[in-house]
Each structure stands twice: as C-alpha cells, then as structure tokens.
Amino acid sequence: MGLDNFVLLSRGRRVVLYFQLLIISKSGIACAVPSTKEILIEKYADVFGEENVKKFSKMTGIFSRYTTIQEQTASDLSYEAAKHLINKKNIQLATIGAIVFVTQTPDYRLPSSACVLHKRLNLSKDCMAFDVNLGCSGYVYGLQILSSLMASSNIERGLLLAGDTLTKSCAPKDSSSCMLFGDAGSATLLERTDEKRCIQMGFRTDGNRFKAIIIPAGAYRNSDSPHERVLWGDGNVRSDYDLYMNGTDVFTFTITEVPLLISEFMDKTNTKPDNYDSFVMHQANLFILKQVAKRCKISMDKMLISMDRYGNTSVTSIPLTMADKYGDNNYGSSKMLMSGFGIGLSWGAVSAEVDTRDIYSILETDSFFKEGSVSRD
Image (cartoon, rainbow, N blue to C red):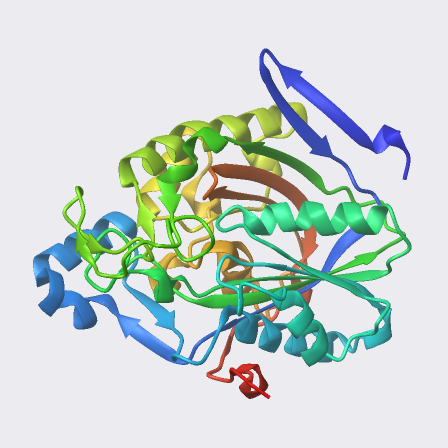
C-alpha cells in the first residue's frame, strides 16, 4: 500500500483525513443482545412517573431495550456474535490475523479483553489482539484501525468486535441515562479482496469537551471518590462511579459538528444523499437523527432506525442497526454511509459498499464466560 492511498484534505482551519482502502472489504456482520427485554413504561413508570417516561420515549424514540444479567459482559455478547459469524462463514481460525475489541465496558482493567476473546475463540498465536477504549464513535474508528492494520501487513482476515453494557454504568434513578442505553455486542469480519471496492473514512476529535460524557472515578484518577450517590446539579442522583452526560453540550455538538462532517465528507467524495442506499448513524436518539437528516438533506426513509427496540447501544449501534434491517435477508449489495459520534468528544464517517447477504440476524443470549470469574489460586 503506497502513500498515494492516504489523502489529507483541508478546508480552512479544518483538517480531515480521508483514507482510501482498495483491498479490504466487509465480509460479514453478526450481533448479539441479552435475552432480557425491558419495556421502559413498565420498568420506570413508578420511578419517574408515567407521563415523564412517555415524554422521554417520544423525544428519544426509545421504547424498549435489552439488558444483561449480572454475570454477562460486553465480551460475552461479542464472543457469541463472533462465534456465530465464524460458523456462518465457515472461516478457518488460522486465517484470522488480528482481533480488535472496541469497548468502554471491558471485563477487567487489565488484561485486555481482546486477549480473553482470543482464548475463547481458540485463535492462533500468530493473531494479534488488543482493545480500543471508545464508545459511540468506536465502530467507525475501529474500521479504520483494523483496515489500516491489514493494509500495512500480510493479515488476510481480521475481526472487529464491538460491544458495550452501559446499563451497568448508569445510576438507577438518573433520568438522563438509565432509560437511554441498551446492551449489545457485535462482530465484523474484514478480509482482503481482489475487488476494487473503496472504503472512505473521515474522523475528528475535540478533546476540549472530554467531560461532556464521563465516568469520573473507577480507574486511577479520582481513585478516592466516595461511592455514595448524591444529588448533582442537574437534579439527578449519581456517584462519581456512574455515567454522567451533559445533555445540552452533547446535543449541541451532535447537531452542529456531525452534519458538518457528513456534508464535507460527501463534498470531498463527490457524492450526494441520492448516491447512498442507506445511512446508518449511531442511534443516539431519534430527535438528533432527524436534525442530522434535515441539515444534510437526507430523507428519513434512508435513515435506518433500531433504537426504538434496542435503545442506544453505544459502540454496537451501527452494526446492530444493519443487522436489524438486513439480517438474513437477500437484499444484495448496498452503498452505506455510516457515522458514529459521542464520547471524547469524537466523531467520524465511513462509506462502503456492503453485501447485505453477509449480515446475519440478531442473536439473543444470556451466556457468559464462567472461567472469567475471580480466581485466587
């Protein structure tokens, strides 16, 4: 892969890297959710009041979601998705040369959950494995990371696993988050191809707003924070070990920066909304997606929606939405524009031609890795 494939495009003071890969293609997607489905009005009417829950669902477009049992983690869901994908595609394990797991809810602080998944999938010692700590933008970032890794090496196949169980990170009476998120995991297979398909990508980051979505404690900063949940300034009860999201800041960021990137992306790639069969956005909430569609002149008929049944599944929302629409259906090839945006703050866009016949229906499972429990041997 030569330097000709890396194109740095600038517009005024804004700089975006568009990365063109002509040898890598998506060749399979599988997703898994827990078996427990929660209807928001049934679970939270007594907590927040029926009218408030209805108002929340009308604004966000979220009416139900799936949540894990206590023992189940994001890696468990992604493992089931990967196992299903490998079996469906009849992939020889020795041909998988990399596994990248994108998550904010790993099994442990260390080691990398990707190494646990490497063991469970029985992959070769010649296969590299590592985690990436990203959320709602993580799937499109993960595609870039794994694609560029494969393009600069002799790796024939790579697995991009993406999963989160953010319902475990939300305070139970935090109305800004506890009804928003759902749990899910995914597996995407990338492989070399002789077809001249082009994956185009663009990314941005604004670290100045890192506090907009944050769990302040639980790692190595603020390690002495109390665990007691108290009333915060926004009227919600949480601790520093719970997820905090500044809704106003995130909303403003999403409806300004994301449409701008998508519009510039289409401009630089000489495409228009009519050139795409579907738009697969991070399922933040329905009102935000409508605003993005309006500002980018995208028909809502092309905007795929899954949040009404699965909630905001963080890093998994893009592949889960594809599986919800195309799983085990014979649609054929589809040109998609995908965009993830959120924590960091970070955002990105990817366009690719995807054979939807390689997208499988969503699994439901409560399986978990029993060997992963604490051992003091």
